[in-house]
Length: 235
Length: 220
Image (cartoon, rainbow over all chains, first blue to last red; front, side, top):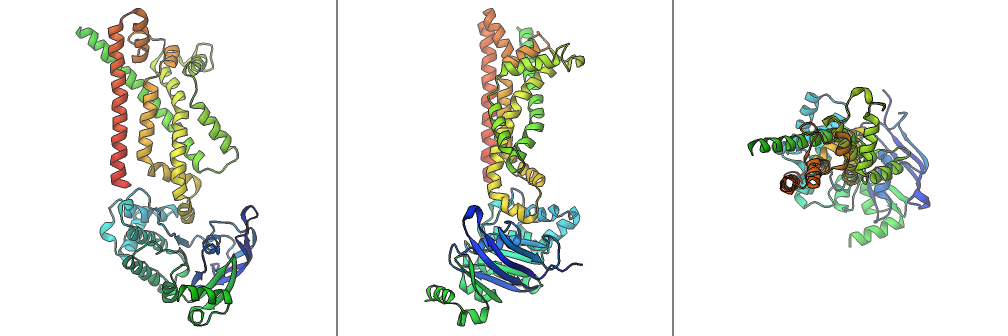
């Protein structure tokens, strides 16, 4: 089997129609790590994650998945606003599995297990779009988890959720990480970054200013930009 | 009087049958075309969209003429002997309605695609799978599109007159009867048929509205 990790980004740039969003990004994501991307609005955090996930194609540089020849399938992403299809909660979780060609009885079994793990088994037959935002995000997490991804990308997954929904999502993410899933997360929530993250990638103006272990980053950021950012965010 | 009523039912029944079939055929072509125009990425997509939108305004009599030429004895499809049959009328109506269904479908699916695109790409959905997913996900909006198509088909007169021939008891539908009875001076019958036709179209729109409202509550 070919190895999917590490994910290596070499001098990645992204400048659609000449508009520079990211430049000279060098980054390495190791198997089983938990990376949090921090930075001010407009720094390019979400774009960086979409490039890694394969939703966008870099304008410059190269991106390797271990020694895999192409974009591996074993990845999933959770968006800030969950997109629910107009079908039942169970149908939404099964959808991703069916797209990947998992046979129906199998898909149902795995979807039910994933729903149970996020505590929404009792809502399996409800139309997904009438659920609350927090419940929808948990369904989206179950949909991602059911795919058994080896890497999960999270784009501010709790930005529009209340504290209890946020805790439920964080618990789900932590459980996936504990089970060996590599995590890359963008968040604006420093508390969340501190609770969950192992490595912090600090991004500003389309450049990586530093890549530091989380415990060091919050005590002693290595770059002036990050120090200023922390000072503003944590008065 | 009773006989006249039976005659009337025949005319209304034939109208419904011809247009129902036409919408089914048009849907089989129009919905996939609309969905692919919305999510597909192939050269000429924009041009095709413009053409499809333009064809919505296709003059019915011209479609009638074209289908007439295709189906007439000397035409390429003449051997099937379809001219002046209800099937020919369904064909003409289907051609008229297909661009309408395709254009409305494209609009609906494109709006949904804006919301779904990233998520579906993330899950690894291929374009044709996305088209199928979106057709299913917008099914309630699309059902009202089909009803709009049916309304256009059943109220059309020029094309079915040309390819059907308005033969009593064979290809006479509501619109062609109205045209004929009016020119003959039998205004009460023409008006009666006119009222039925308008009532049908109103009922269709009420049903469409009902579906939309119900689906909005149930599925959001």
